Image 1 (spheres, helix red, strand yellow):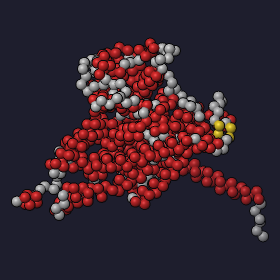
Image 2 (cartoon, chains in turn green, purple; image 1 turned 90 degrees about the vertical axis):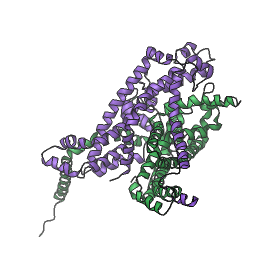
Image 3 (cartoon, each protein chain N blue to C red; image 1 turned 180 degrees about the horizontal axis):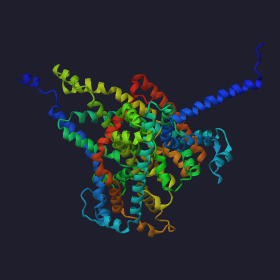
Image 4 (cartoon, helix red, strand yellow; image 1 turned 30 degrees about the vertical axis):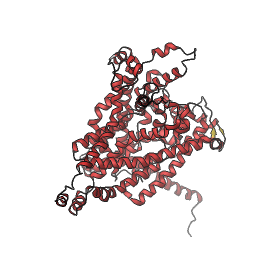
Length: 330
Length: 305
C-alpha cells in the first residue's frame, strides 16, 4: 500500500524547490558578479534620477505639502485629491495656450527645419569648391555649441530697445524704435527664426552624412544618360534621402510635446507680457514649481506631458519600425 | 554650334551660376551663424560712452579695453564662476564617462545574463520620465543635493542615449574573441575591461566625453533649479543672473526703495558682453578641432546592433 505523503513532507518538498531555485539564482548572480558590479553605479543613478521621480508622479494627485521629516513623509502626509489638480489645470485657459504653443512651434520647427536643413545639405554637397564647403559647415555648426543664455545675449544685441541694431536699422527708414520685449506680435517669427538658426547647421550635417553615403555609381549612370545636375538632385539625391527624412521627422514628431525650455525661457527674457505666445508646457511647469508655487497643477501638467509624450513616441516609433526596422528606437 | 556646346557641358558639377547661388546661400547662412559672436566681440571692445551715444555698432566709433580691465580688476565673481564651471565640467565628465562606459560595456556583453533587463532599464527612461516636479523633489528632499555642487553634476551624469551609442560602439569595435582570449589568459572581467577594451574604445569615449563636456560647460538649468549660494554659480548661470538683476533694477528704477547704487555696481553693457566672450571663448576656439568627433557620434548613434 502506497503511503500517502504527509502534508508536512509535501510542503517540505516544495520548500526544497524554492531553496534550489534560490541557490541557482544566487549562483547566476555570482557568475555575473563582475558585470553586475559594473552595471551598479549607473543603475543606481537610474533609480534615483529616473525611476523614483516616476513614482513621485503620484503627487499630481495630491495637494502637496512639504514636510520636514523628509521625502516619504511629504508624500504620505499630503492630502489625496484625485483628479482635482487636472480639473483645475484644464479649467484654465493656460492648458489650452501651452498645449497650442508647444505643438504649433514644434510643428513649425519640424517642417521648416527639414526643408532648410536638406536644402543646405544638398548645397554643401554640390559646391564645386569642397574646401569652401568645409568652412561653411564649420560656421553653421557653431550655434549648436552655444548655450541658450549666450544666444539670449546675441538676440538682445539685435532687439534691445535703445541700443539694438534692428531698431537702429528701422531708424534709418524713419520707423520708431520697437519695444521688442513687450510686443508679442513678432515673437512667433522671432522664436522660429532663432530656433532654426541654432539647429539647422547641426541637422544639415546629419543629412550631409546621408548624402555622402549615396552610391556614386547612381550619379555616374545618370550622367551617362545625360541627366542634368538638377535632375540628379531631384531624381537621385532627394529620393535616396527620403527614408532618413521620414525617420528624423517621425522621431521629432514623437517629441512634439516637449519644448526646448532654454529657447522659450532665455530668448524672450522671461518677459511677462509675452507669455501668451512664449509659454509652453515646459516653462509652465517650471514657473508653477519655482515661481508661483502651484506645485499640484505644475505636477499635473508634467504628468499630462509625460503621458501624451509617451504615447506619441510609441506611436511614431511603431510607424518608423514599419518603414525601416534599423532606424526605429525599439 | 550652340547645341554641340550644350552637349559638352559638364554634368558632374553645378553650373557656374548654380554654384555661385549655392555659395551665396550657404555662405550667407554660415556667416549669419558666426556673425552674432563676432558682433558681441566688437561690442565688448567698444567704448562705453560711444555705446551710449550710438548703440551697438558694427563700426565702433571708439575702441576700448575698459570692459576687460574692469573684469580683471573686479572679477571675483567671474573668476569664481569660471572655477565652478571648470570643476563641474571636469568632475562631471569623468563621473559620467566611468558610469556610462561601465554600464554600456556590461550591457554589450553577450555572456551577461541580465543584459536585456538592464538595457531596457536604461532605454525605458528615453521614452518616459517623471517630469520636472517629482525630479526636483527627489533631488532636493530625498537626495538632499540642494545648493551643492552635486546638484550641478549628478542630474546630468548619465543619459540613456549616450549608453546606446557607447554600447553600439563596444559591440562594433571590440570583438568578443579578444575578450575571451583575455579571460583565457587569466584576466578578470575588470582587468579585461581596463587593459583590453578601453584602449580599443578611445574614439567612442572621446565622443561621449566631448558630448558631456559641452553639456556641463553650457548648463545653466540645474543651477537655475538648485543653486542659491553665489559661490556655486557656474558661468552660464552667472550671466543669466546678471541679466535678471539688471532687468529688475531697470524696471524698478523709479522705485526709491531700490538702491540706485546697486545699478551702478553692476557691470556695464560692454563688460557683460566681454563676459559672454570669455564664457564662450574656450568653446569657439576648440570646437573646429573636435567637430569631427561630434559628426562621428551622430553616425555611430545611427548604427544599431
